[in-house]
Length: 350
Image 1 (tube, rainbow, N blue to C red):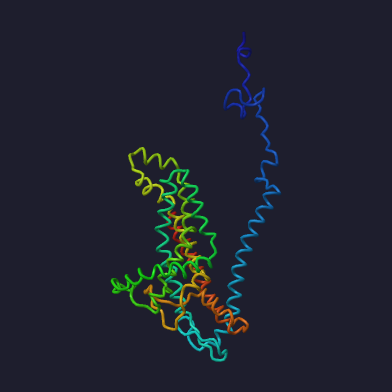
Image 2 (cartoon, rainbow, N blue to C red; image 1 turned 135 degrees about the vertical axis):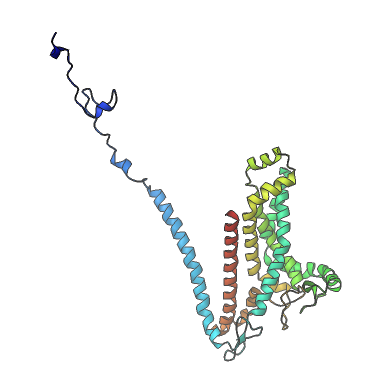
């Protein structure tokens, strides 16, 4: 045999040389796999998703515009009265709007009373609401927890005027001896010192704050209870497996998990307290004396109750503008409280 016959014909080089079985039957490369045009595009948006997204975005924009419109309306109606005001609106304690040509009105006393009664009510309601929420979610039997939670939620459905009547006719006479004892024995503390109100009569921040605490208690309790109930069971079981007691489980897992919800519920309750009108209008006694920053034995009026008290003057736009200016302060105060609550919750999450 000749050398030519024993030599094999070299194989054509190509992409198939890189490995066995790759390529076509003669070593030619396979054609590239084509992708359908539909798979190259992004996720297809269905008409229902598009409609729902548009409605959600439109609702958010509508609410934002509505809040902005309320603020613009308050400013627009308050400016004419503020231009005729002869005293500083933010620092004056005088309120005289009878003569529209010589108006003198300030919001400082109203602001102090509003903040004082709301904060006092919040201080009373927050620990009680926390205890109730922990009891209902961790300690109470299921047969008792649901009916008790339902009863507490019903407190939020009671009209505020009913709370006002109860506070004025029932609670104020019952709380007067306690307020008098605190004033006599702890009067050296600014909170229980003599104020502008009659302690025996009961129409003070002390009485109004306790009634207001009962009013905001179901709001804080409901939100806190729902958040605590969402605590992951794995966290609770892990703590129990490590030998933690029931209280240690609550302290190390339930409360840290639901802290943001507890703060949110408290701020919702504070917002309700800041805007409460009828109950405080019926309980608090109006007075011409200046309110102090700390004494719970002061009387006076909150911003909301002052607006309700001056309703008869709303037939004149200039006089009404003075009360609208006070309402603008309450609007800004509520906005600041909500913004602070959101910032606090964001900080806890971080």
